[in-house]
Image 1 (tube, one colour):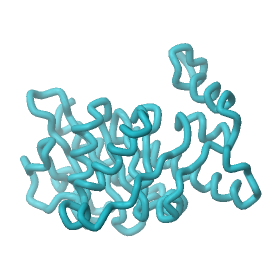
Image 2 (tube, rainbow, N blue to C red; image 1 turned 90 degrees about the horizontal axis):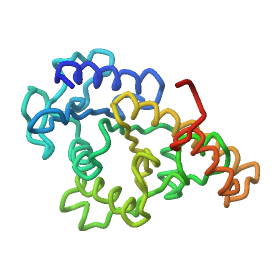
Image 3 (cartoon, one colour; image 1 turned 180 degrees about the vertical axis):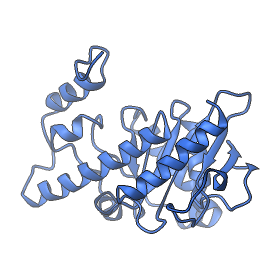
Length: 234
């Protein structure tokens, strides 16, 4: 992918999370990575800049370690989380962080979102996981980088595939989602918020915490994402 094309896609992704109400004020960010060159490059939103006035040239380009390659503005304060996810999950191409209302509520409660229905199962292969809280030492040492490390640790501990589970709740904080592109990560952020809202209401109505039978969830996920998927057009 050409860097200019990635800039436009990341700009669109940032504007889209605002348009969909997933990131009120400037509570969110989107990034994308270009792995086609000899050195992968990340394009990310500048810190605190309004989505409506943002231009492609405002976006920041860094390497995978967060070193700025292009750009005059400060990058998103979540940069180190994004770059760590790109390093540890090489199959992803875009990352989105939001503070969407219902997903953030589950994160603040420190609760994973159980798979209570087939809408959830169509997009997430199992519950939406939640991380452990950061320790005082982790906050002091490197808060943003260790947020990414928490996410990776949760996925390693449960042997989760980041493509099959395209998002996570950071305990006490908010959700991160990802995908093969920045716009795919936006779609997953939107779906996660919808799932979180459904789960909240279903729980209030007395839905069993165990969720739907595993075989139903498996069937729905595989018919959309499995090797013999039947959903959509070929």
